[in-house]
Length: 78
Image (cartoon, one colour):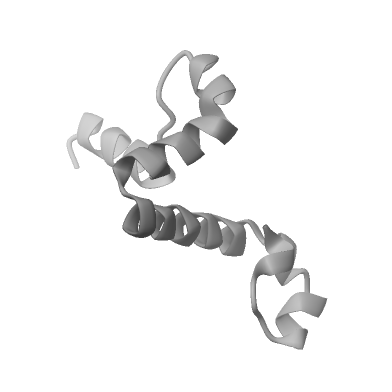
């Protein structure tokens, strides 16, 4: 996906096309564009095409760092 992201030469030369944040943002935009263009079914089909096997092997849903921090803070009474 990184080769398709339009970015400055400086960003690209510093590894911007492989930067996980840039790739995550591009993927989010791509899925959003598929949803806007083709609807929910098209977006779901795209997601399942690439991540169905990964999702079926998960034992628990993934959590982002913010959720983990919030749960920890709440458990400590903050």
